[in-house]
Length: 420
Image (cartoon, rainbow, N blue to C red; front, top):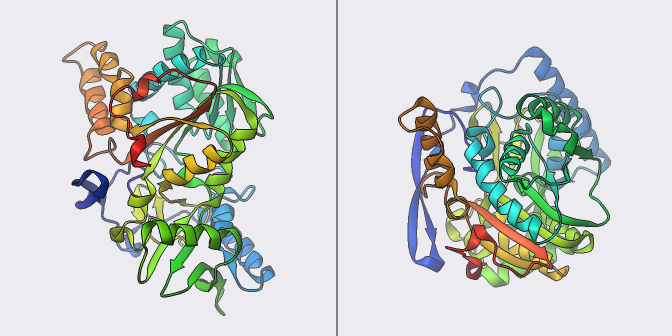
């Protein structure tokens, strides 16, 4: 539930254990108010949610009363014209449902640009950003690359939401109008690509299945509809690729007793797909999650699924479908296993704080005049991005690629690839 930064009043501390390092850290998390105290949506928003609810309910009935949760999540987030990311509601910033790192400070994009510039030199002067949100990261990266005299020939954005595409163009036109001609929007992944692929908080929003490991049997948890038309939880024995993945996890992590968690076959497939398309270059994936032995740790016996609505986090994925974000943490071991199986190499893995420091975030901070309001704001944001008890530890950066032999600057210190 720490994946999105939320503006909320009540917070508490949870202790997260990292067995491989024999240590624990304390992380603050928002205490969600009772569902009755969440902000009221408008009449128009409620009607929008009801339309998506009805569409999902129809899908449940067509599937015989059981809809895989991955399909529910896909429809809730991406159903054309109705899903959370496919409709017109504001998602990012103080007026939306959460705040991502690029919305907090340009320092994030400036530090990331240092790594992108090095990776382009080792491959090709091309960038694809997948899931570009408001366009803030693209603007900050392009401006920083311009300052470094390292602009790409093309900065492509892959985002299927017409609303987000319009907002991205608006952001870029306001922040970097002279660079807008270098930006292009894609409708699909290119068949062949050399350069740098950037995805910030993409993997957590790819559909995932829910799995229950019981005593001697593994179940898939999906969605049903009761006689009143409300969504309910249903279970059936897991099968196919999902069962194979669940069995492998159970053996590797020695899962015992009742254990509920997520498996994202979509995230694995997305990572592996680049093995066919990437000719030379680097994938830089930034998200919140863990190596597998920490993802499926006993303290996460109820999984990591979390919902984000108007800067509140809560656990009910059936609440106002289409008006809230649904996320799961990332199993980074699964990501690199899928990519490696497709012929790609692991080029680095570390936490976000270390990565940003390696990429010169503090040097960029030092360029701001000291003892000014801008400096104080930037300093506070930099601390939030890098400190272990904030976003610095839970968020990870993984670099995957082909044909790049040099050590990437973001992983020169503190590389944690051994933990995968």
